[in-house]
Amino acid sequence: TTVRGIPMRHALIAFTILALGACNTPAPPADDAARQQQDVAAVNAFVDHIGETFNTGNLDAFMQVFTEDAIQFNQGMPDVGGKAAIRKLYEDALAQHDIKVVFHTQEVSVSGDLAYEGGTYDILIRPRDNPAAEPMTVTNRHVHVLKRQADGSWKTWRMMTNGSAAAEAPK
Image (tube, rainbow, N blue to C red; front, side, top):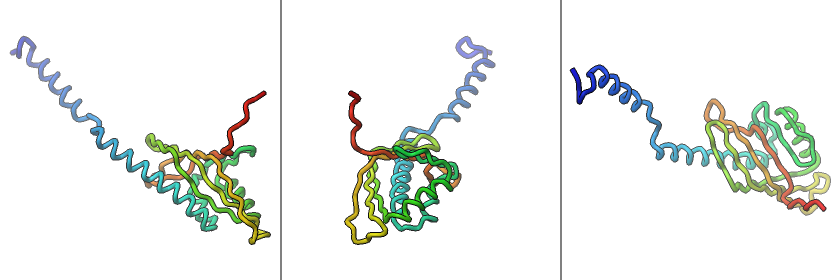
């Protein structure tokens, strides 16, 4: 038998292919947008958590924001790779200075299990050997590349900082 000149067997195969294809239809864009909004909100909350945790002075708690294989890239310094080396960097700095930080996120983008967050940060620095000194405030730029963990949380995988002053043009 035929349906509009097409053998019934071919019509059934075509219908089955179309029906199976409908089962694999991606989620509607509204679901993707809602998921994106949730991810961006989670990244923003995580960056706030980084600052809050650092400012408590509890280095053990602060180090939980990094993956084991994190790398920190700071202007004018060698790259610091691995959680233990990053911890040493902060231990040395905090031994000499009372440091507080405030992040100002300007951009967040999430793609799968990676997220990018960038902006500026204010760092207030006071020498530990002179607690009465007026703290110095410096504003720099930063980029965090975050990795989603198995439990859905975010951790810093890569971090780059540099000065906020514009570079001079070569002469």
